Image (spheres, rainbow, N blue to C red):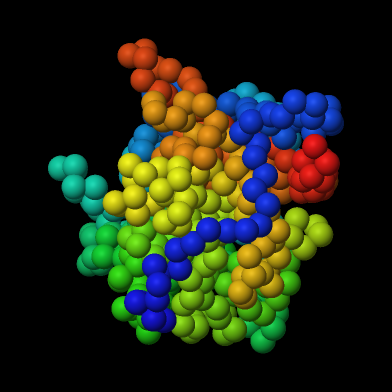
Length: 421
């Protein structure tokens, strides 16, 4: 990669920008739900960073920390396809109260007939808050669709002689193939404060979970990994999750670089030289899901680096070189990750700041970590955190977790309606 390439990928995008933050007049009634927001949890002044998993009974489980990136794990369940969130898990482990990072949650499906398991992971970074860190990461498992969970089990902690201080574990968890067939192994990614990105492989021996010792997986491209402060990597498998190629999409925390794309055809053993993501896909904490028509729905925290857009919408941020449009989704196909731009950008809702309370181009950037599920009827339920207008006791903006429902078929209809109106 040419690190001196003009603006390191910065630019604008040309694909349609669908705005779900401002309901237009005359909108067909059946599309009105696209503009609705549902509160998941506003029980504290600040709640952040959700993740979600779809349960076999159709419920949606959403988990998140009681603060900015850390704090006791909280949970909410939706029993009506994301239209409301009414209760929490009844049997949360006591050890979840000690969580020191953003929890992530995944479903594990087995090829040997073992019933599915749910996996929740929480890392142990050092926040430099005087509390130190035990190091490594914690995980819990559920064998009964979230009714009961094991207490946190620590992996690769300081007490066992390791010096890992993970951040966002696991940013992604990818089921692996051997000989072209899926096996019961999963590749998890996390990073550390030096922006070294690690992988660890989860497998089961005699029914017990075993994690391999984490190793750097991007060392061949360390120069750009370090320069861009690459982190929070999502992995997408080609062919609607059945193919033999993996695509890595990484946050560039330095923000002087666009997000990075890299590809693997050997199940993550090696990765191609990274390229810059198109500006339509530039952002942080990418979370990707397929719908049944083969399209990808990827949520991000938008990072806009176009010099022209900066001068037009946020000249006060021109010196730092970026602003955010807030909670955004990209819609396209896997093939678009090889040099395409995609089909749509969707502004899912307006994230407020005191300076930008009403829907507009510039939005709050404390948002965008999402829990996404796709229901059997192709309804996407996406949840995030941010300031959406509620105030706390001292009149400051409250940061809380919200959810939105949408179907891409209805986004198509909205796009056509907007063309005619």
